Length: 236
Image 1 (cartoon, rainbow, N blue to C red):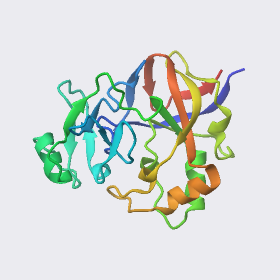
Image 2: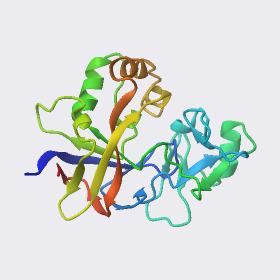
Image 3: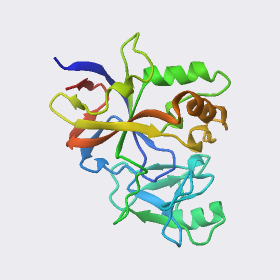
């Protein structure tokens, strides 16, 4: 029998990587993930993408998380919003002034993926509630962990229930199927300041100490379709 693990409570899409995202009632999911998710990024002259960390592909650009982006039904690119939530008429010019870097601008994904790891991230309310209890000094909100799916779990569900999903397939009746692969490795972005959420480095310290920086589940898409708030997710 399929095991019910939760109900989709919120859906998040992040049109511009490392900026705040947009809440959706429903979204198409294709082989790449939620349609439009991380489709754009801030790219510098060396071809690196703005992120919360420095790696071979990514360059740390502090302040991006104070911005937000929205795709809506647009096909010509995302809307970018400043820290006060006001739309930016010229994203490239704004980003150069805001980041004080002359070689940055919005770029659409091409040959190099904008995803850190896998395309779909899922976080349960059971795990989020544990974080809130473990770090009472911080303002805890799912936006800190940037999930695509916040899953409302049944009462009594233990935290980190996601750990039991790896190697299994999550299914929505008549729709999307997600192949759960591994946990999401967390970085300084979980404690970074963003609108309504002050700087809270103690969150990452706690996740590092208790969970070796791993929190939430990452998945690939094994069947495309539409995902909706209120969908029941079961494990095959």
